[in-house]
Length: 70
Image (cartoon, rainbow, N blue to C red; front, side):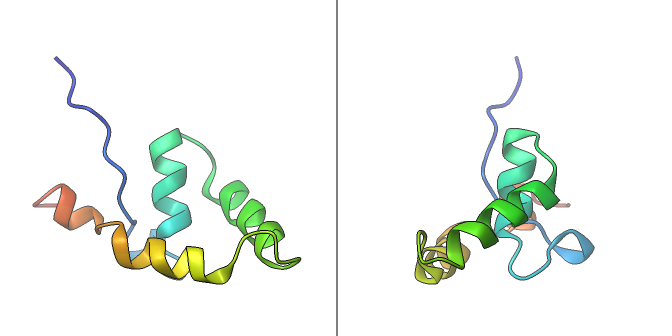
């Protein structure tokens, strides 16, 4: 049986700032650039607060925490 997907922040070269967008992209199997562009478009006009992104960076665990040995 397949292990359920887990949301995490990407690390290393895959992480641009905190790895939140990269982790969301991997979770939904989307292109990370697309997720980053959508996030920027939501943050710039004030639709999504930058605080939401920062809180997500604090709450969502790193990939190495979710998958030890990564």
